[in-house]
Length: 165
Image 1 (cartoon, helix red, strand yellow):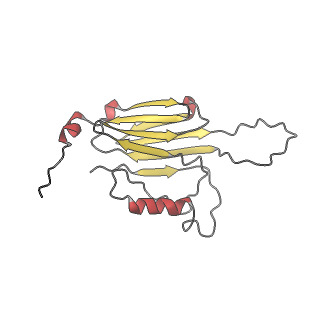
Image 2 (cartoon, helix red, strand yellow):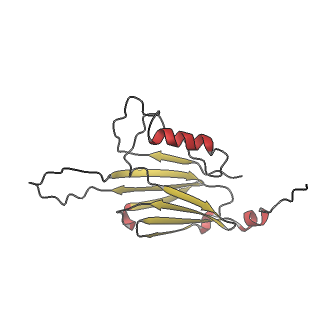
Image 3 (cartoon, rainbow, N blue to C red):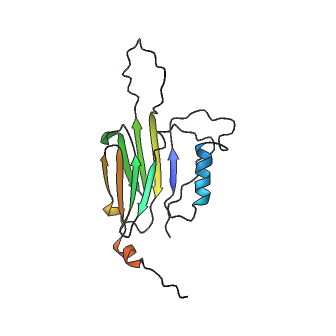
């Protein structure tokens, strides 16, 4: 069984509350980490006090079929030039920046600001079964889709084992 470990780093921080790990996203992350530690894609628990803006931790789906893993990340409001995808020593790192675009006139008052801005970085330890030379990525309509093909040897080693009854 292979693992993909996830880490998050951010240069933008929100002040953490008195109980940052008892409530909110970190609590849910810890629950999911503990519940799914047997799953092939394990997320590392963020360091204490590592609070982030919503955007700074982009949402990611990882799926698998017999031939490949697929990582899909939501990156709304970004262009190709705002995103970097690096591979080094079996670690795939997705990073980028969403800059604040002030369309308001200098005399305008901002009453509500719910959109998030800032930089992000997420790293994934790739399973040994991934053919790193064949990784491909495409970005359309705010979705980054990274295809991580399995090596032919890894595909051949996958088989069902009969269970006698």
